[in-house]
Length: 346
Image (cartoon, rainbow, N blue to C red; front, top):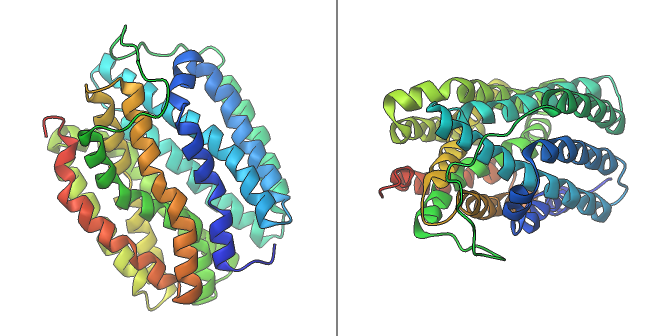
């Protein structure tokens, strides 16, 4: 589109803006529509929106199409997190982190295929079109006969018809989660551009930065539940936050590409368990229904995805992308002081 970083940052608002709007009523959609149909319809819609976004000729069209994709993400996000919590409740085993691992593996695949297609000059539209066909078929095959788990607390009906204001406990979980969301969002939106602009890397090496962050996040999430069971969510979170601090430091002060790649690896691994643990804690709180708790947490946490692209883009355009990533440090400090929010008794 021939636009600068600041304009791209504002255009990228479309996705989180669509998420924010839809989260206002996503809990009601999830209660009324079967989980199976949400995925069979929602995932292809999300993929199709990316195809049209790749054809955009202006930042306004690009942002508008991303809003539609964000709407699909919001409903899928609430539905999948609730389903994971229900399975945890009825099976007695943690699976929340492992379920989020597959989201990360998807980003890893996106990073690798995107970098590979870019390296051999295949258009983004063709890339997204092939992915749309593939994921739509896989989703249909996996979920056409899927039977959703029963609700954690059956018979609990929400009395709220509109926006649900989070309880104090949910607000603390919001503050706890913000750093991980910013670190993850910065890696997704800006890691490839960071490698290109700071170190003038080839596309395949730039794409490796996103792929490393995603695969580290996926591997940690896949095996994290057993460590959470053994050591508790608070201790695991403290180690994760420390990994993010080191990772952000590596990126901000990287003298060469290998140091930055190590930083993105640590950022991905460190951010892995924070949001899933917060989601699990929110679903278990009893102030409101699980659907309302999960939706209100997601709504406020995704504010960082709404604000991060333009803020990071503006800072990157005027001060440099190193300063953009340095913005993660203050939120990481806040997360350290709100780790206790994972305990529903606090």
